[in-house]
Length: 152
Image 1 (tube, rainbow, N blue to C red):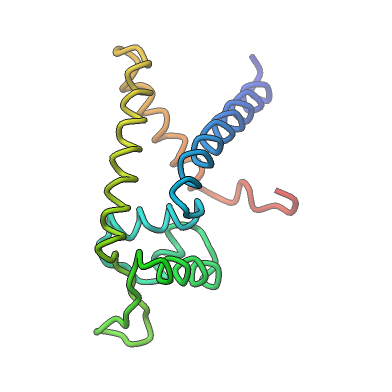
Image 2 (cartoon, rainbow, N blue to C red):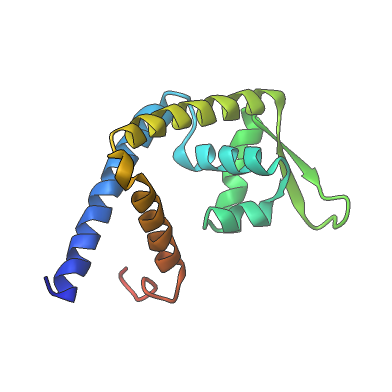
């Protein structure tokens, strides 16, 4: 198979994967009353325990203004606290409230169970290969300006 055809196959497989993950996330996360951006923000805040608004925006690849609106909604829903960084008062820090911690724990548990079930469907002798391939794919996405041309 030519390199162009294998690149097209990769594109198609990723497109299908995006659709499957998007459909899954829409069904499972909208029932919890938060958007996907809010869900991803909760997970990152929960994993970091305390994170600046700028770091959170960078992690989620969102503009600071978009991240600020997302965090405002989480604050209004009593899921996160917004505070001033004691070392640098220009930075806003985000942490989970008690309700936010419970919500984060539920998200983590449900995602872990779901992906354990998926992993169980991968032949045991291929599991390490899948993980290695996913890591290589993520690293390839992180390199260069492959997708920054207009229209992409």
